[in-house]
Image 1 (cartoon, one colour):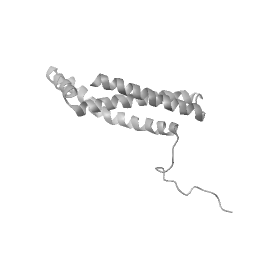
Image 2: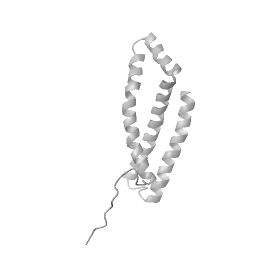
Image 3: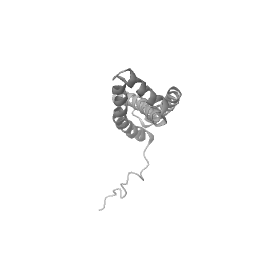
Image 4: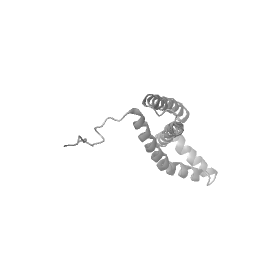
Length: 125
């Protein structure tokens, strides 16, 4: 009597459903926000040191592409994390747990994040 067990447990080859990918990405954006706070706290601290340092922090955000890209990335991560977090809260109350509604909610999270990314890009640049 042999049991039919999965032979391949390599997660890179298993196709995950969209709600699972959104959930995993929700965790990744949380880590990105945590790490990105180092950059934001540095600029915040710099801006509070005096008028000259405030101008320096403002110059960093206006003149350097990498700083703008990091700020935009943090805004997009925050938007995704917010939308996915609200989706998770709604599911915690027992709504949208079925596969079809979870798929629609995941698509909504992605669509809303794309809109937020465009708006954040217009605002940052």
